[in-house]
Image (cartoon, rainbow, N blue to C red; front, side):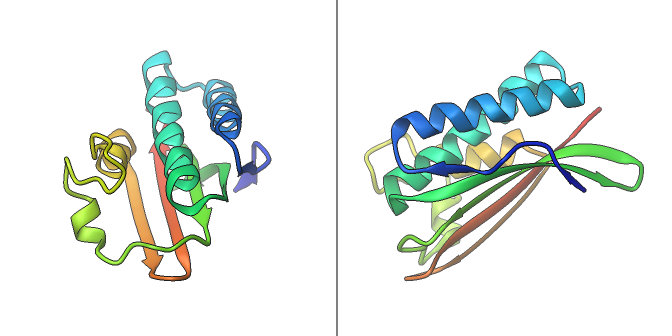
Length: 134
């Protein structure tokens, strides 16, 4: 595994834009189609926005991954915010504590090929997702 892009620290809304741009460039460099580049940048936007809205600060890392002859892009979101007490609830479409559409995390799961979320109330949340190159 080789790091393609630096991690993007999320502290302002402009950092969301920067994370999206880094993700799009990494996906383009790896050879993802325009449609998959859009899926990846949308997932990054949702994850970065969640950091900004719910944790205040955190980071998005973008890595090239390889496994079993496949190449992909891993997007990892890490924050030390309040955490999620009921992951099953936040993974339901339409659930939101911010008044949004409640499509963020379920949407990321649908857009990416692999999705793993780990959260501890009071300690933060980590989301790891991978999109494989086809």
